[in-house]
Each structure stands twice: as structure tokens, then as C-alpha cells.
Amino acid sequence: MGNLRWGRGRRSYWPSLRAPRPRGAGKLEERPRVRTSAATAPRRALTLAARTPNSRLSARGARLSRCIVVVPTYNEAENLPLLVPEVLAQDPRIELLVVDDDSPDGTGKRADDLALADPRVHVLHRPHKQGLGPAYRAGIARALELGADWVVQMDADFSHPPAMLVEMLAEIERYDVVSGSRYIDGITVVNWPIERILISYFGNAYVRRVTGLAVTDTTGGFRCMRRELLERIGIERIRANGYGFQIELNHGCARAGARVKEIPFFFSDRRRGISKLSWQIGFEAIWIAMRLRVADALGWL
Ligand SMILES: Nc1nc2c(ncn2[C@@H]2O[C@H](COP(=O)(O)OP(=O)(O)OP(=O)(O)O)[C@@H](O)[C@H]2O)c(=O)[nH]1
Ligand SMILES: [Mg+2]
Picture 1 (cartoon, protein in one colour):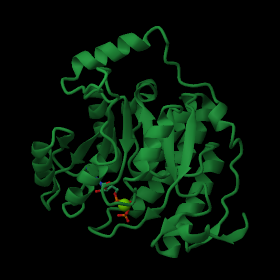
Picture 2 (cartoon, protein in one colour; picture 1 turned 180 degrees about the vertical axis):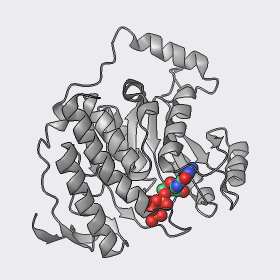
Picture 3 (cartoon, helix red, strand yellow; picture 1 turned 45 degrees about the vertical axis):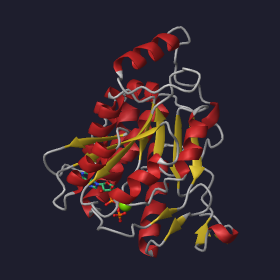
């Protein structure tokens, strides 16, 4: 285990464990980029512009890239009306897709009101609670249908700070995935009970060891991905729920040879609403990591 150290100055007040450098770290950025043929790139841009009625143009008439932030919600009526304007304010290229599983607290209705007031807000209603993984799978697929060039995954409870989107958008110009990490710069988690930090930290170490993934935060769900990468992975093939979904998606990115950039961010515990986390989700993640290892070894993927 790494050295015990205090988090960096004003930015953290947690005693933090220096995360061990993952094997192969630093090589991540040198991996071959996902093939986006130069010959097909202009045609793609034209196709996208034609099939997306709300494509917007820059002052010079060029088509603006579109970033769709996918936000799954279950009982987030308190958070959503605060989150949406904050996300949209970060960059004019950003749109937001709420994926609501018929939340009993009326989150879906709030999302519809926000969409009526602003064409940059989209809503996907699903009939009943089906879990975080399926919500992301459906939301990412819809974001691609809507014509997104970049898709961001983000929780609705402000654990993922909207202000980080600016850095993500700057970095995604040069990478295929930009992933927010809680463990690349010590442990940058605020307000979580210590036992939850330990489970998450050592759970991540376990997943990295078993799967060989080089990213430091394998279970976090805050990342921006290029359209071409998602099409290459085939989002419908990612079947897991909860943290398992994040592990499988990270694994899919690695297999696709994606250029990955991890950026540190401060993850804070939710301030409003209640958690949907369950032990079942944790156990599934342990099982998914083993399954990926076996499937890799036997060439099933
Ligand atoms: N559509 C949909 N969204 C979900 C479901 N379960 C969780 N979510 C959303 O997924 C995001 C992450 O869920 P959280 O409950 O915050 O899970 P967590 O971050 O691991 O745990 P806490 O932050 O402690 O609550 C939040 O925006 C939830 O509203 C679900 O079954 N369907
Ligand atoms: Mg949360």
C-alpha cells in the first residue's frame, strides 16, 4: 500500500492514501487512437448535421460539436432543477438528457418542465426502476441517436461537479475518453464515511488487479466519451448494473484501444435526496471483474 499523506493544501482535508501508480500508467495516453478515418470524417459531419434538426452553427457558420450530458434520475426532484441550469451554463455546446425511471417523487415531470423551457434539455422516460446500468445504456444510445459527438455520464446528486465539464471538453479534443478520477491525486472524496471510502478504494484496487485495467478509478461514473468510441464498443453489449456497468465500460474502452485521460476531481457526498446504492450492486461489481478476467483469458470477448 502507498504512503499515508495529507491531501494537497487547501483542496483537500482528508488524510489521503497515495494511490499506487497503476501498472502501465502513463502508457495510457500513448495507445493508438480509435480509428476515425480522415476520409470519412467530413462525410460524418455532414450526415450528423443533416439528421439532427437542432444542430447549431458557430458565428462563422461551422457546425458546433454537440456534447450531451446523460443524467440518470430516480427520485432526484430536489437536485434536478438546480443541476440542469448549472450544467448548461458551462458551455454552449452542452445539452442534457435526463433518463428517468418513473420516479415516484415527480422527477420526470420536473424534467419535462425543464425541457419545455429549454430545447437543450431532453428527457427519456422509462416505465419503472430498472437500475443505473440499464438507465445509462438507454441514455447513451439515445444521446447517439440525437446526434451527440461527445457523451458525458453524470450523476444527478452533485457528486460530479458540473464545473469539471469545462476541462473535460477541453481534453476530449485530444483523447477518446476523459474520465474523472477520485484516486489519481491521493483520495479526493469529501464527506463520505470512512468505511465507504475504504470499500471504494480497496474495491478499485481489487478491480484493477483482477482485470488489469490501468485507470485509477474503475467504478466512478463521471466521464466524457467520443461518439466513435461508443459506436465501436457497442453500448448495447454492456449488460451490468451499478458499478459493474462502469467497470465493463472501462474495460470496453481499453479493449477498443482508446486514448484515455484521467483528471482528478473532488467527489462529494450527495447533499439532497437519498442513496440508491445496495449491497447487491457491490457484489455484482466483484463478480463482473472476475467474469471479465475469465472471458479475457478464454478469448470470449
Ligand atoms: N434512471 C435511473 N436512475 C438511477 C437509478 N438508480 C440510481 N439512479 C441515479 O443514478 C445516479 C447515481 O445514483 P446514487 O444513488 O447517487 O448512487 P451512488 O452515487 O453510488 O450513491 P449515493 O451518492 O450515496 O446516493 C443518481 O443520479 C441516481 O438518481 C435507476 O434505477 N434508474
Ligand atoms: Mg450519488
